[in-house]
Length: 370
Image (cartoon, rainbow, N blue to C red):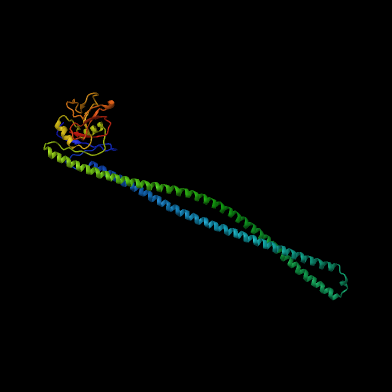
């Protein structure tokens, strides 16, 4: 392991593998991660737009259905009113026909009474029998003519009564049909009212979903803006750190390898070490004061170093299993508070005495070397 080259890792929270880059090339891993975020946000926005389009289409169809149902309901109501009017008209006609029938019966009875009186007069002649033979013959002819007229009128009355009876039956049948149709229409109106209530409930539910989708869109937009701001801050930090590292390298004037700090979410000590191993190195070993000063000069936040008691409880050792000879501990450190501070961090202080022990599960960035 060469001590002249340093790599600072950064592990992104929520990802399965860490990423690194050297100061001699641009940072590609964070950029790729940023692109993935933009792609995911774009896909989410696209899905939301599709859902909104589907919702608007459903709402349009729903409104059209309600309008059609209202028109149908109005048509049914008009038909019911027409049927009621027809029934009333038929009832009035029926009443008029019954009145006319009674009048015809009265006329028929009156004619029958007159015929009976004439027959009585023929059978039982009184003082008129003594009249002349010519008068009797004339009266007989008149009676025969009258009898024929009465018989013809009687036949006409009977035919009219039969017609009225048939028309009455037809009117009653028509009235029954209208009553059944009215009942059917009332049932249909009730069904339409029930369906209208269900459609109103569906409409209210869709309106609620629309509000939820609009709220979700606003939240995603705010999250997108926040991610863009974080991306800009990360790019700014990377740029500033690269410039600082170049300046530090020019000040030192030594052949040290490139040192790069990757700004990202922190990870535990063991995860940081695994990241270093995956990239052909390990957490940094600081065994000289010059090395301590060099690393302290460019760090801007707390970072892990390769010193711990994870494999040898009670004894501080470096990742190459060498024993600690000289430490650059902060005042009153190490304390081993809670008896679980088994790993060591380096704090961004002006002094080189900036080591601190703390639990290995804490989240920090790490410095790798290879």
